[in-house]
Image (cartoon, rainbow, N blue to C red; front, top):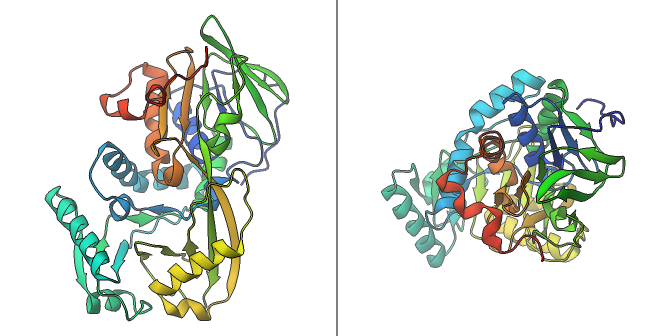
Length: 386
């Protein structure tokens, strides 16, 4: 990652993006590729060090979906963009984001689990999606580390993974090389408007004038003042997710491995990630004994061999969740020039490339695609309290 220093001379921009995670960084890159040159990203901490770095990097909409809806197809579209996205970032930054196309296994340990995965197999096969039903022996052949209690499994060859921290590093380097102004350690306090039109952003470095502002501050989106009104305006709630990381002498598994209760994510360097929790505890990012116990219990169900592995690291991140659990993407009808890209919850890494392209199109063309109507801010109710 490049050495990034705040540019104190930059006081005007075509677009100001509030939030320097995977979503904000991806949007900035997409806008530059559409010839918007003066772009500033404001980040309260370090670029990409919140939910984006705490994630596991799974790109697995098929493994996680219980039914087909607009969100499912949005997620699949974004997943399918990753091979080109990764290749472009390698060219722009010189950083390999370690896109792993091995696929994902989803395990059944009980009769109820088997019913669940059969339902998933049926509707996805009927929709023309690739999914493979595996016997116990077939699953164990692919991953010998699996528990002897596995009854059957599904394999999703299209569900893949990326090394999310390398992805953040690549996006930062690409943004830097593209001339985007990165302002880490900078607090945005208020979006300023006049007569229903964005004027800019008040920040800890002073006022930045811009006709367009994008709110991409993740779990902190609701803390921002908009047009002099006290928050919250866009109701995004932080949801803590704890993670464990184990060290292996060799790569213990090849696939991302799910159960209905937890998951394991193998990394190319031998690390094995295990997760996760979903806890509504405000902005508390502490790792707890209860959280670690919960993850370990679910992990040992998948693979008892993990019990012998040394614990290398543990962390927690705050996922941004909207009231209906769906991402919030699009313009704010009440204020011209104000856009939102937040509330991605557990899917920020997955949805980054498509969110960036869709929002960049909306900003430059002013047209909201019909398939995006389920995700616009107005669905959450009134944005500004009158």
